[in-house]
Image 1 (cartoon, rainbow, N blue to C red):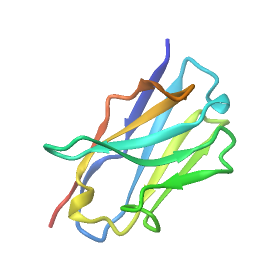
Image 2 (cartoon, helix red, strand yellow):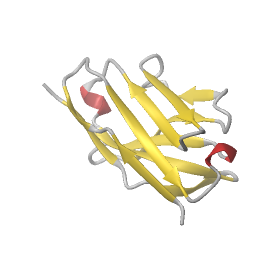
Image 3 (cartoon, rainbow, N blue to C red):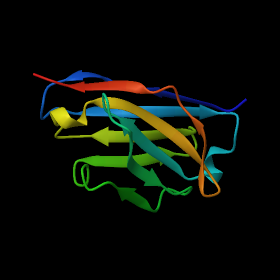
Length: 117
């Protein structure tokens, strides 16, 4: 059974940092690209960042570029998102997802990130 479990969310002040983790099981993690997406209250899904299977290629939305860093540890089957210089507009539920073909076939349950003073 494929499972993706996000963790690391919480309440942080503007300018603070958080590190999200996505622990996976049930598939060969090192064979698949992965992404982080988020959904802010009342808004649709926003792609945040992606990483290829080997970790050597990454991409970021303009809204997070220079502040967020995606990485992965294929030995631990875990995806990460280091978030620095957080802004109130980063408040959202963050999800990780597994790539499949041109889309994504498995998603985690999400972790809440709230940036507020």
